[in-house]
Length: 406
Image (tube, rainbow, N blue to C red; front, side, top):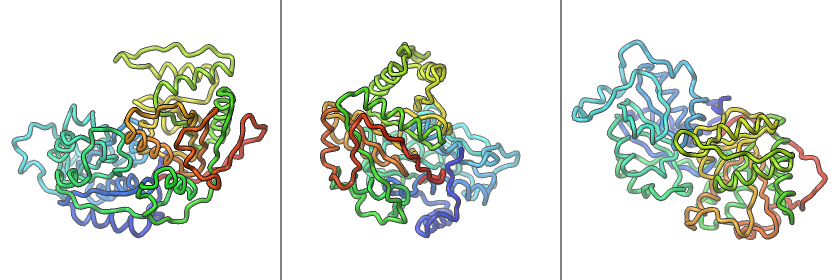
C-alpha cells in the first residue's frame, strides 16, 4: 500500500520548498515542520523529482526505525529503485572529488532505503541523502551522513525528540551547513486533536501553525472501573476498524504494556497466553507472537523493530510510542492512560512521547483508562471529548479517509 499523496494535493508552500531545494542541488537543507505538516511527503517528492531529472542519481533515504523505512519503501516507485546500467551523470558532479581520503563503498546508481544504524554500520557514498526524523540523530551519525554525500536534506521537529542523543536544532543546522525551510500549515491532524495537544502542552508551538481544511472529528475518552472492560472495548473497537480495512493502531508506552494487553486479549478469548520466546539476538521474538495471534484468529500484529507489515490494513497494529515515530494511521487508540502508569522515566521525554502518540491519528482518536486517569488526561477540557463509560452496548461507527499521509 502506497502512502504517496498525489502531487496536485500539495499546497503552494510545499511546492515552493520542493522547487527551491531542487533548484539548489549543492545546498544542504533542514525541513522544519510540525506534526502533520508534510515533512515526509516532501522528502519523497524531492527524491522522485530529482530522480526524474537525473535517473543516474545515487540516492539514500535514511529513516530512524525499520517501520519508517518500510513506509518509504512502499511509497517509492519500484522502477526508481532498480540499479541503472549506465554511468551516473549526476547533477552534483563527482561527489568524491574532495573526499578522496574517505574509505567508503560507492553504491550503484539507484535508491537505497535504510535505518540510520544500518548506514552507520556500512556507510556508502551518494549524490543525495534524505533523512527523516533527524531530531534524534547523534552528532556522530549526522557527521557521517554529511561526509558521504554532496547534498544532505534532513527533516524533523524538535518537539518530537524522544531520545537523549539528538542535537539542538541550531547546532545540527550549523554542523551540516544547512539552510532552514519551514512548513507552517497543518494538513493531517483533526482540529480537536490540535486543541487537546494545546491543552496538555500549552507551551508547544503547534498553536502557531496555520490550518488547512481539517476535519472536525470527536475524540473519545473511554473510562472503566474494570481493566478487562477497557481492554475488551479497545480490542473490539480497533478490530471493527481493521475489518473495514481502516488503518488502525494501538499505541502503548513500552513493550511490557503491549505484552500485558495481548495476554489479556488472549485470555478474554479463552486462549492461552503467549509463551515468551527469544530471537537469535536475545530479544523478544515478535514474529512468534504474530504467528500465534494469527493462529488464534485475532486480527492483530506487533509492529516495530522489523516485525509486522505496516501495509497490512486488515490487521490492528500494536506499537510502542517510540515505534510510532514518523507514522500515522486513520484510527489510533491509546489505552492504559491510568494515573499509575509511567510513560517514561524522564519527564521531558515522556512529554514528547505522549505528544508523538497523540499526533499519530489523521482521523479517529480514542483515549482509554481504568479507575483514575493519567494527569495528562485531566488537563483536557470536557468540551473537547466525547466521554463514554464502560461497559457500553453500542456499535462502533467506522469512519474512513483517503489512504494518504502527511
